[in-house]
Image (cartoon, rainbow, N blue to C red):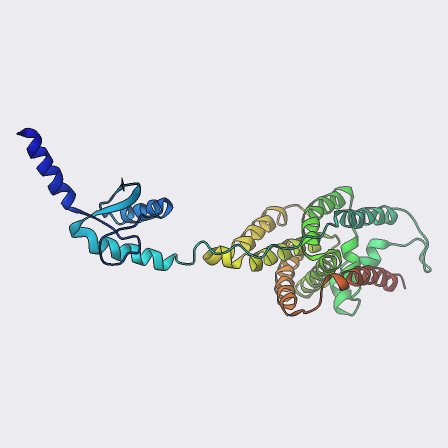
Length: 317
């Protein structure tokens, strides 16, 4: 007698629950729900405090809902599917990486060799000896008066071994990655441009007697470039979180570019902002450019070297 009552109660209980159709259409389910989707739907309904339970019947998973909650549950699941119909987005097109780490390291070695040259008394172009820092520093008043070459020559000067080592170490980390993404020529020209533009903006806002030296303006320009390039490349994947690369770069700027007794915060900030701006422009030009960038990469490399040599030639005249 007791077992018959229990069976009747079980039948009544089962009739109070109905399965959700896999397609969320009206009618009873006759197909299985993929296990991954089943877990997602359970989480959605639990978040909305709608009772549910999953059962495996005849090797098919079903999501059961109380009869009185059926319409509400279907509504919530339909809304969830509409909001997530394109999620996750397809992965971005795989980027072609350029294997040129050795060339990047050689540029950093040349920067170190040049620092060593500036520590010796050398007679050139009528200078006995050459006062490298005096001739090449980013002197705001002289830049505004027309000595534009200081915008570039200042990037090659350093106040001491620690200053040099810091810029080579930090810059090397980001430049290796940037050169692999863009190619050496485009990467170094863009970084040189960010340093130049950063020094110009800094000279315009600083007092006339402001002076600065160091490659850190270009280093933070490289950080801004990398953040912008990654943001543009992964914007469809990040969706509402698209500013994350820029936010991470801002964290690096605050951590590494705003401390120290002789830190030129303005140069770091303007270099970083120049990197973001030129990164946007570079991304737009790359989309419109119809010819292989590899063909002009070597030319851009020589042009970057030409710019540095020319500016120092002008500084020594």
